[in-house]
Amino acid sequence: MRLIRDEALDSGNARIGTRFWIYPQPPFIPGYEQPDRVWLSIPRDEIGEGPSDLSMYVADPLYDKQPYGLARLPPFDGAKRAPVRPGPDRHFDNIDPTSRPFLAVHAYACVRFVLDIWQSYLGQRVHWFFDQTFPRLEIVPFVDWDNAQAGYGFLELGRSDVDGILRPYALNFDTIAHEVGHLVMLSETGIPTVTSPDGDFFSFSEAFSDCVSLISFLHFDSAIDRLLRRTRGNLLLYNELNRFAETSPETQIRLATNFRRMSAVTREVHDRALPFVGAIFDSIVALYHRDLVANGCADRRLLDVDLRELAQDEFDTFRQATAEAFSTKPLYFKLALTAARDAVGAALATALKTLDPNTLRLEEAANAVTAAAQGPAAELLEENFAWREITASR
Ligand SMILES: [Zn+2]
Image (cartoon, helix red, strand yellow):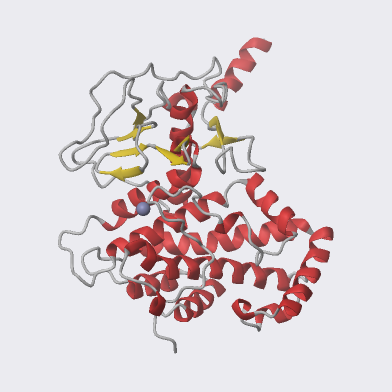
């Protein structure tokens, strides 16, 4: 009797998701040496060895592989490493995080984790923009190449090389989330068929992907806890949020907290993306402050001053008030940050559906995000896009 009941329980549990390990930041970052155990929404009976499922699969080359390009597309048809199998309980958290097979499992888990978040914001499944040709995304966890890229049917990960120290991007959540951001955006807006010389499609694509990386990172409970504890609730401090993709696949270190306005950037796509990413980050922080003030956790004057131009003594006053409130009411800080994250994340995702990739300008994208925002997020986004000179100020 006991046995039958347990089996019944277990077949029900097979539908509640699958366990994996993910490093919220690469393990060489101090404080992030240990991975988090996460539950992905995909049921265990829908994941096969590889890992693989109905919308993606890992192909791990046994020997080195040339990166994909215009003339070279998936599927990878060379010799592959043996597909990674789950444990006897069909979860994937039995793989040693220091082993070579872990790269495949970690890359897959990161892609799924990010997709779970953005499908939630979109309110629907993402249908890959390449699904007429390739039904599934191919994830290549390791290529001997100093880059990472997502393209038509694939996401492939090389390794960084900093002073001769090689680090696989398969362990770099920021990098993978950024690449998934490109895939999500292209799948929602479609691929541009004409490129206009003054179009911003590629700049917006970089901005959106950096926002995906930032907002997805804020979905790790452990990361939010660590961030808030370390800063004692004060997000105006230098912290994990702006230490983005340390070893950026596109060779630039992109900062979410930056003071760049459109009048101070070049036409280079990553540079031109910075004010947009900054506006999104500032809006999350402003919403967070609003919520803290409403709950008596921060000085009301925080809402009235320009935080980018704070004098040191003002900054110290705010910091002290926040730290005192944080020591007694940390839960409110966490709730405020997750609510701010989701309000801005949902607006970004919803805006994608209204954008025309052929004529896209950053101004239009900013207006679409503001229009898609609910409640106080709309006003704060509008203010921040205007401060960045992405939209005209009123
Ligand atoms: Zn990119």
